[in-house]
Image (cartoon, rainbow, N blue to C red; front, side):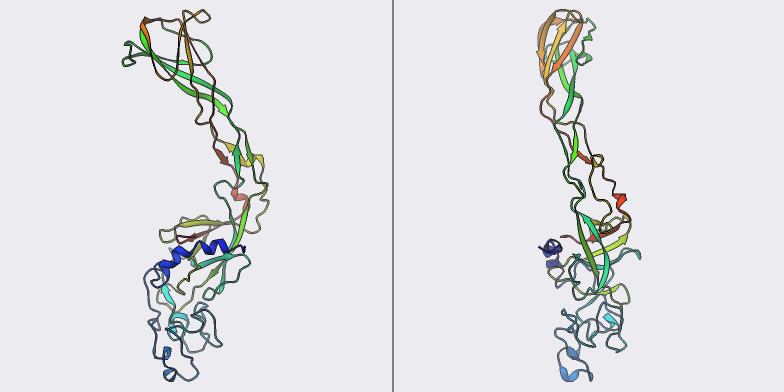
Length: 354
């Protein structure tokens, strides 16, 4: 499979909107030398000036995909056929092209189409735009994974109630693996809410090197417009993009963001330092509470954590202990890859479907 084939296949949904209505380009604008509609030379060879060739459907041979000798190349900002009209000004040769204003400000360039690094640029997009490499997985470029939680310990918040249905709380005590002293005040019910106290997971990268995909962009920005640039409407395998140096926000018209890094990237290898893990989550800390006359003494009674325990009447204690055997749980991987090490970036913003 060629490097650019997956990119091109993803564009079909957007192109269905573009063909016929130029929706991604915005409002149609005329060039300063014509309306872009078919003229008499477009259909009638006898109406053509001497030396000019009739076009089909208002566009020349170049406008439909290839360039004829001495025909106007509609996106190269030159007067190729020496008729004094450049690109969109030349309605005879460039009737299938449109003037579009799609750039947020002068630092952006476009319109661009994306191709694999070794693919040829299509007709209508003759110039080389920004090229580089994109991350195959920008969120987790080294494929960081986390092992099972280790060194896990739990605690419980013990709440004591005056009634036997855990409605009227009287006091609360934090219980851990060591005995906590009680106040000695009587209570009728209790509830222990377990919580994770400590724990960690070991992180490791699964990719020996950060996977990049090399690509290039092709620019089709002609002249001859009162505003904007002269551009060819996209075909069924194209998604239109714009680009600017540095880390830039994308616009509503071009919402899909890709970051281009210099290609080939310098030192894309992954190391242990590129990965870490978040705190364990989903750990089952259910355990049991034991109440004592005094810490270190004989247990008076016990109950499981989680629900309300009716102790059968007023009860007091001098010490309490929570014991749990943590189960399950996992840690979320965190990527620590310093992407700035790959050099200056270019922001590529593309229409939906990229």
